[in-house]
Structure formats: structure tokens, C-alpha cells
Image (cartoon, rainbow, N blue to C red; front, side):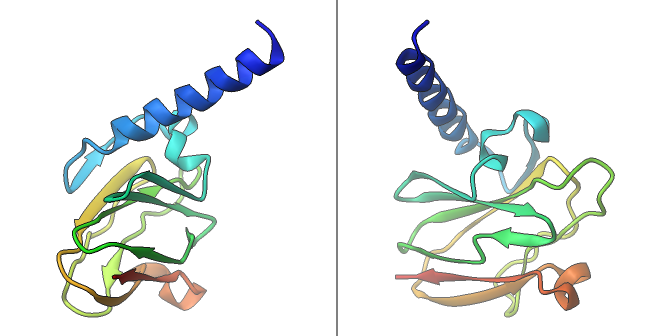
Length: 135
């Protein structure tokens, strides 16, 4: 296989993995962190209404994103095995994932415009905060 065919194979493989990630519920287990395409990129836009945010190194990667009304944001815990769980918790009562372990994910749909600051409850003082801007 030539280098350009390998690169194309990698891109197509990652895109297929990201598209498959769009089909999960509020909370769920996915592929192991080592094989999860969404853990290898900072933010994956699956399509205009589905975005994945990685939780890595006690940060939301990216910490601020803009999405359209009706979009679903999915946070994936991409920390190394053995790291304590994270949450994605709105600063308002819009959502609270509860704790979820490495390799798990949580999704929330944003039906209205606005700015939605959020944090990881156990790691807020470490600066694990973010914001979703819905336009």
C-alpha cells in the first residue's frame, strides 16, 4: 500500500469511527480509550448537529465550543486507565452527567440558544471548566 493510500485509509477509518460514535445514548460505554477515534483528536465534528469533546489531562479539549441550536455534544473520558472519574455539570441546572469513568461518555442535546458554562465537579478547582455556546 502506498503512503497516500495509507493516509486515505487512516482518514476514512477515523471518519467511520467518529460517525459510529454519533449513535450512543446519554451515558454509555464505547470502545476502549486506546482505540477510540474521538480520544485522538481535540474536538470531532461528526456533522453539524453532533460534536465530541474529549476529557483529557484534567481538561475539556476544547474548553469552549460553538454549536447550532439542536446540536448534541458528547463528552468522552479519555484519561489513562486508573484516573478518577469526571463529570460534565452545567453551572445552571441544564444537565449533570454524574461521575463517569475512563472510556465512558455522556451526551446532552442543546434545544435553545445561549451560553452554557460547565465544569467537572471533582476537578473544578483544577480548572476543569468549559462553555458551550449555542447559536
